[in-house]
Length: 149
Image (cartoon, rainbow, N blue to C red; front, top):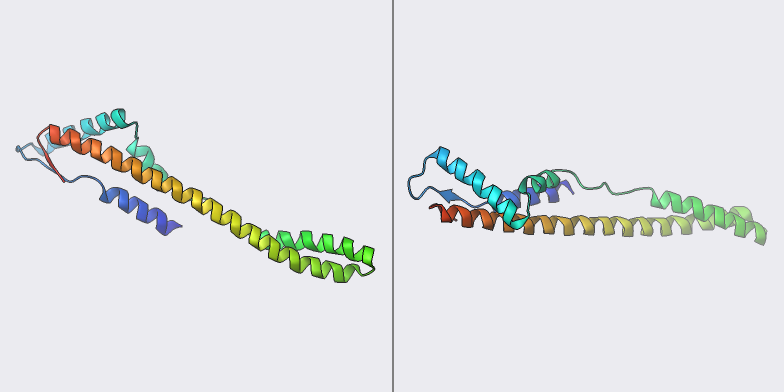
């Protein structure tokens, strides 16, 4: 998961426009123009590039564990109850534990896949928002006489 976040942060940085002072603007003027264009881009697009950068730097939700153990415990309890009715609580508990372990593991795996899918969708949305923001900055800087790639 950390690798995905690192790749996203790198991709966002890679999308930033490269700006050349085509009319001989000083570094101080370029810094001022960049700051003003970023503010304009934020107001125009509604995208806060600082907030997105901070969110992409935070680790995602950790994957949950223990589903198989919980499933085994629940299955054993249910199996013991059913086994007691049938006359062999121990055998019922053993069968229930095995069944519960498998079911709990599958359930946990599905939940972890769903969380990962939500995180990926959020990362894609953040990437699209950054691309929109960077296009707005590029348009602004071009309008101020810079060459932007």
